[in-house]
Length: 490
Ligand SMILES: [Zn+2]
Ligand SMILES: [Zn+2]
Ligand SMILES: [Zn+2]
Image 1: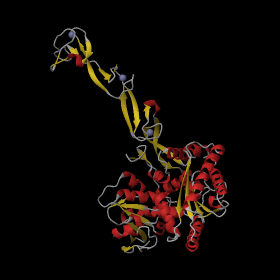
Image 2: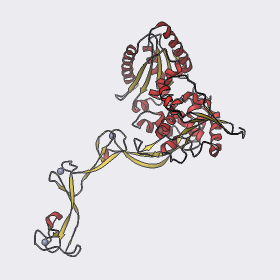
Image 3: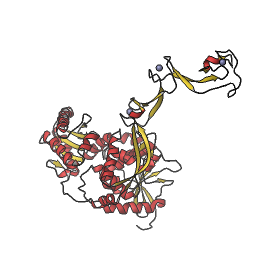
């Protein structure tokens, strides 16, 4: 890296795709490439004009922060990528004078006040050096791939995974990197994953806070409310009781009210000075149904799933910050090749993603000649946290077994690839979208029943899928791009 001059050039606009041409016509903001200190930096101003896998061609990404939600979505998509070169990429938010939201900031490597990374140059050097130690190192880590991803991310950043307090997080605390990678909204899987990382000695937990979460959905947005212990009514009024020293009468304040004065209903004397002739020893509450009580019950209403719980039914959960341990760092760098297992892509009948893309390209060309439609389907296993936990010890075997059964249900002409350990893509030649989607649905049902009986699956296991018709006017990568836009998988 030399101290060469800084230059900005418009990014060569690849006309391919055609998906965004309408918006492009109205959006003149262009992405540009900045060369600084020998680094190729992509400055993203037009969020639509970014193909996530192609980011691997740059050293650094700088995202204009003028539309904060879009910037956050792009950052999430980068961190969710399956490619190490992409999800580990140094990313900065170009905020100028604007303050970045804590969650956005946590997902980035810093905020910049001007389009230059000089201020963060040593950080970038450190990240790039560490990435170069990791790139290409295969791992046979037998747990969930997301955990390995997290460990590599933390290793390259050399900083802990810190929970961010935000009203946008389901539990009130967000781990943005994990949220980008785990689409479960209800967070249990994230908690379980962090527990596994700790149990395996890769992460060290440091206490940050304790939260109380809805026992049903882990929601942290709760309304604590006081209710009548007899009938559960939320509608009640409290008032003081008055003790009249002179005659010893005790009753609610309302019984003493007499035209802005206080008069004892028993002895008819007017009350004078609190502490001298009377006092207010307690509060009493009366509900709309006439029940009088001193201590109301407290219950929690969940704004997310609307469940009402008693306080002792809430989940008390510890929120930790996580540091990489030495053995975690070792796994990040070495891949810790203990047992040698086959990569999922080496499974019989599965092709690698790049081979899949070639097939896709060929299928599109073939289709334009033959006039027959074909389809491509994205399948994502959304297994319940309990099922994943049940099989976490032999996760590789478990997911290979599922993949094998899934493949066995497909037609011999169908081409299938892994995107990661719980998602597949399938090309179904010469079959319309509707027929394919119906057939895949039947396979999904059968697969769920199979998981249930063979791997202690739960009722909450789900498999989602979406089938896209191949369009001969598009090339293979733009079909993948289209899938990605909907599903955000690359
Ligand atoms: Zn009541
Ligand atoms: Zn009295
Ligand atoms: Zn809830």
